[in-house]
Length: 325
Ligand SMILES: [Zn+2]
Image (cartoon, rainbow, N blue to C red):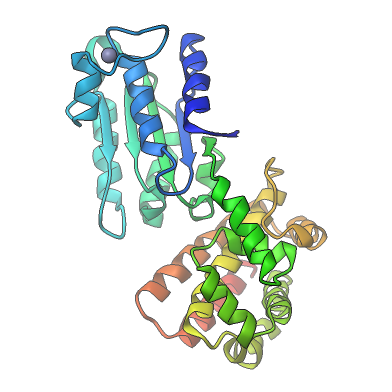
């Protein structure tokens, strides 16, 4: 489902009225698309004491306390820091074990859930597998690809419309980038200027081929994958921004692999790799596919910690290969 904030409020009004609210949602959308506004609206819709035609009034004590962050049944985990750790999730679970006022529903929001460490994500996963009644958990993120697919599969995904993304994809195409790669790049944080400068310095078609050759070698468990780091990846991903792009490409590819393996109904990032992905998915176990994805998240963290590109690549390649042992 992909819609504007207003449409989604209408949708959730119907869902709540029909008593069909799910226990866990993932709100996906770019910054300022209204993810938190929707979460807040939903809490108000549940707690408002003065509903107006099914809409929260925004004025009553309950509605106001939600906006002021002062309602014990509407809790938001929001961190300015880089990560959300396992302690925050434990604290959340402790809160969850308490029941709400007069047994009413409680709403918990994890803002920027992509900041969860793998340990935190796993801890949350356990909860999502055995949800408490009367609790709605809402995760928000700007980047779906950064949420572990194992978590994604436990949530209802609600996408807030980003008309600018389709526009961006078109703008990237107008730079001369092929349609698949434009689609992949549109979901990354890189600016048009940066992509333009890659176009001038690098053959992006060849770059994709190199990336896929490497990934194919890994997924078919060939030792050549390690050699390709030296001979192909390092010489061709020279520029620092391009080096930062590589985990995005890998995550997009492995998320696709996960989607194919688990037959998730969502469009692929690498639309031109469907056949390859199907073949890889057939050869790998569900467990392996899941483990591969977790390694990519570690890869990005290594890069953010300023580990050298070569070390990051070699380490990641070995780790990915080890999953297939
Ligand atoms: Zn109200």
